[in-house]
Length: 445
Image (tube, rainbow, N blue to C red; front, side, top):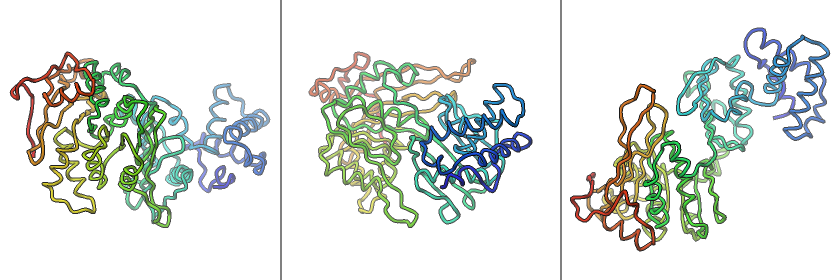
């Protein structure tokens, strides 16, 4: 997009009413005074600084008389509309906001601390919102129009963006921007109440002993955050390959290869799927494979990798419980282009999956590990899950928070032996079951 197109538009971009006219007027005056060729040669930060300086001179020369705060706000609004994303710019700079949801020009919602709230701001028109959307998707060389009404992309700054426009959306253009916080350690997650120390030491042992771990939960429960924290427990000496739709994981080890899928181009060619990347990763001599999310036929390749020597792999899946996670994996694996009977897929999951860590987002916005379950079945047996940790939540309290306690159960002997052989201690809170009767197990088919 040309610099002139970025600064001018058929639809003036200010808000409604007098403020909107003032923003539009000053943007026009700004355009008259700047040298577009010179501006195009500047870096983004220098370009913004130059525009702010020129606009400051214009306001000083022509008025109106404004307080220091009003003057700064006017300059910010005009430059945001000219170069940035207008009314969304302050939201993107607010570190407390994790999600921005634009439901048409008149409804803007954000998520803060796990709670969704509507903001008293709006786009001036449908056209202004569309121009903002087009500006966003153009930064990743994508386009959105009636022939391509859905876009899912990652911005260079790391945010995940989803766009869907009419005719698919009946409420106008919809824009969702998901921001990812910095990576957190498991100790920091303890501070948030997501888990506690015994669970941390158990998870650390399971990861370092190369158990295959599936992190399960609904949308927005913190699966990627936990996966990133668990990945930090992988020894520095191992070769790790991460595979994601939108690169969000931030591993700190030195030997990490990051792979990201690619959508088709505007002609519909060149698509590289998660499945393609999982298959290719097996030829790259990985010690660990970390899949950001399995959502299709790649789950079969992932399961086969887990059960044929690539122990210690990690992945996430969308599911509402540990049982649902198993059934979801089985269904996703059946979506591959290889026709495998459900019975064979069942055997594959029993062979591949060791641990399911279930996450839940509660009504007060908190995200917690609500269950750690071991898959303690073999071959064609029904899935048998042994719960070794659980969060027992209490009803919503008067302070608007949900409190509860973590409880622990003995580990199956087979799991304890495997931890012992890997040199990993068993946290005292758990212990080891001496008989099957001591295990908290349940079967599912």
